[in-house]
Image (cartoon, rainbow, N blue to C red; front, side, top):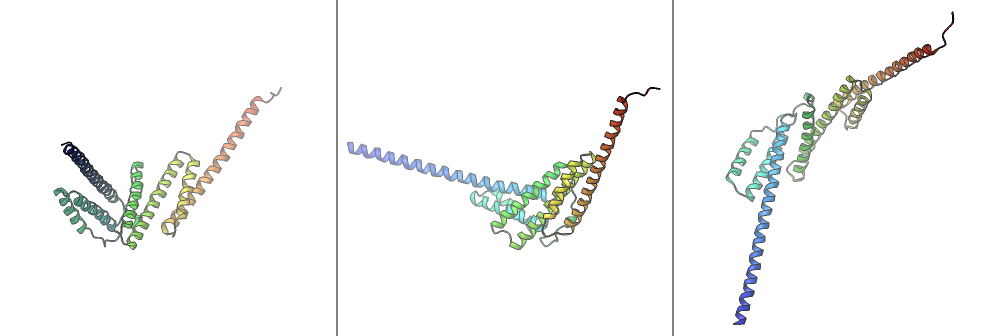
Length: 252
């Protein structure tokens, strides 16, 4: 009888251990599912944000299609992990959107780009371009982008990023000149020239803008030199006034 009791105790212990292991396995699977769903949702949200920002910039329809395909892949991964009717509907919707994108449409000319007036919008532009380049590299690493397409699109984004940075420096330089902050203006212009000359290969934009900035730099140096001369003359006049004030008075 004691043997039977011991056997029952052992069975109960083993059953408890098994139940605990099963529960832990279930909880681990549920945690993995939540993590996977959260990861895919993050990809979708991040890409949707990039699409909204890309719509305000001169980017190709090929890149827009790539972004939508990224969302489609994330939705398919979500469907495999957790089948839901609304996910199926979103897949159908995004598939229809992709079919309506003409990837053969010529990319917009970057010369049409104009820097926004608002500094907040400019910051969003810079962040958007960086985000687009990160997404493009990620999709390339996954094998979702043909090498030629990746090279062309990344180069276009690099040129766009250069334009945004350079034109921002130009805007700040002009603002500094208007407020008579010649030193700051010179720093902005020199940074712009440096960024333009680093670009390889050079193109019409980089060479023409570099020449314009060099002319601006020459003007800043001339204005600074003129200001020094003016200040020196003013100092001499002030010194003469003081000297005449304290000079011995003549007796008549």
